[in-house]
Amino acid sequence: MQIHSSIPDLRAALRNCGRIVFVPTMGNLHAGHIALMTQAQALGDTVVASLFVNRLQFGPNEDFDKYPRTFAEDCEKLEAAGVAVLFAPGENELYPEVQQYQVDPPDIQNQLEGEFRPGHFRGVATVVLKLFNIVQPQVAVFGKKDYQQLMVLRNMTRQLALPIEIVGGDTVRADDGLALSSRNGYLTATERAEAPRLYRVLSDIRSAVRGGEQDFAKLEQTAVVQLDTHGWQTDYVAVRQQSDLQVPQAGNNSLVVLAASRLGIPRLIDNIEI
Ligand code: PAF
Image (tube, rainbow, N blue to C red; front, side, top):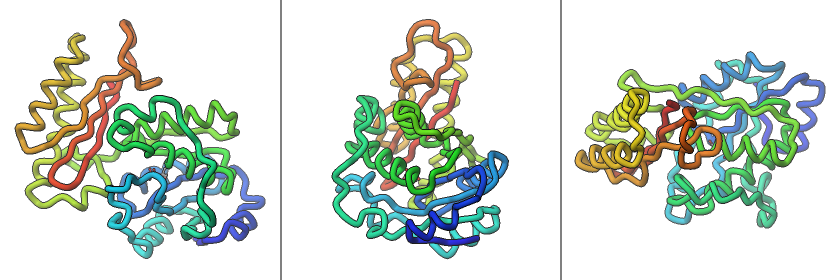
């Protein structure tokens, strides 16, 4: 695997690489990331991953400084997964000056995750557009675990007419249902045993909706109570339309249920399509 930290070196390395499939990451890779790399192999000629902990998408009280950085282990995993090229820029390479030009997503950036993480999606969209301009892939793969992120990036790509196909990768779960996440490493043993409840309450909502329940507000409220009586502090549980993450219109059956809740220090997010 080639590793490049400079933009000109990366661009030179990517000449004549055929159809490039790009998988951006912030590192601390787990089986969920590796599944995206495997999926990427089948979509083109050259898989390019990036590893960059993007300061712009972290709020002032979030875990930017503490975010786990495991570069050597990540490189081993990417190499084993058949990634051809890794772009791992330092901050001075990607942000050599204050990034004053930024991508401002529409109002969805203030809902769900955005309500609790102001500015997060602006930071994500900005770095991803910049990475797209550097790598110039034909395809990019993002995990469905960050469902709202995938939707924002898909819509950005379409509205800005970027010649890139956006592909979603299924969430990888532990045997007990917990979605794999870099932030699971923050859980204590007791919290780890409790954590699969998030997936269970989402699964219960899916079963209820499939069984004909239409009172989404009641389902959401019941889920919040179930979580919070077991020590969680829930930000939201929400049934939304898959296409735009708005409140479901009558007759729309392509739904997704999304949740974010804090268990001790870590804040976990998850979702299930219905
Ligand atoms: O999902 C992530 O890891 C990040 O938000 C991304 C897409 C790499 C942008 O920094």
